Image (cartoon, rainbow, N blue to C red):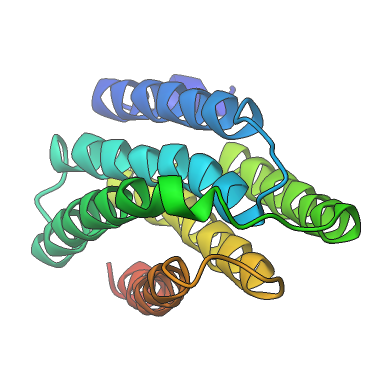
Length: 187
């Protein structure tokens, strides 16, 4: 008997929406315009990444009654909505900071590895009838991807206005991973 036959209708609906969100994120991130600016390239890939986290959180909120997880999802929605607005506000000036061809190549090579790992881990996240567990198993690699993408960008000369945004992403996503790992053990 295959796993999908044992999943409840709610879980199937939740997962169906998750896979749509994931596909939209992958398309948005891999289809993002690449330029001579690592700062610009980071922003145009991180915006669809953050939008996916917002939609994943909204999807969870349709099903969960777990208060700590509801608060976590609401926090993700708020933080990542604010982060998108911050990135959009600096996009124009950040696009002016250009990087040499070697830096672009090194940045992109590492970014591709990060994205491939994140996409694979999210696609292959263990599925069960507990939507809360499914969300956590999907969101942890998503957050880790944002952390690694931010750390990768910080290795190069980037727009000064982008640096505090990346620092905030790293800090909040690390806290989020720790909280989700704790919740996974507890619920």
